[in-house]
Image 1 (cartoon, helix red, strand yellow):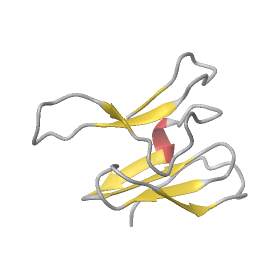
Image 2 (cartoon, rainbow, N blue to C red):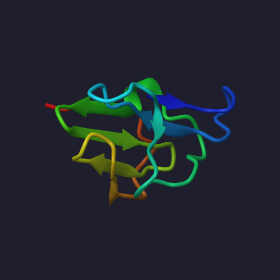
Image 3 (cartoon, rainbow, N blue to C red):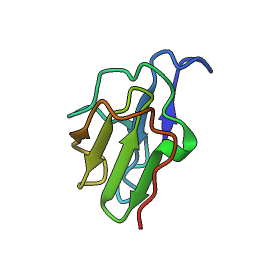
Image 4 (cartoon, rainbow, N blue to C red):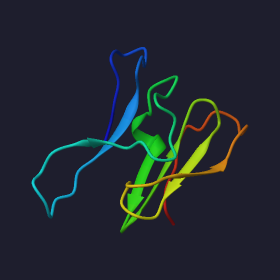
Length: 87
């Protein structure tokens, strides 16, 4: 899930929850910016199986292949990402 301090996106971040353990949200950090500069909108976060992708307003694309524990920057300087999906 994504969350921010306000509708304007201050301190925006992505959080994960491991349903097999004690359920609580943990901020995704390894490989991601400390805070996103804008909200990670609903259609800019997608998951399928163990994989997840995030696209941000700055045109960066991040991939996790371990349920959000670690992330890698796949691409930067794209146009603003508005929607992502697994096919």
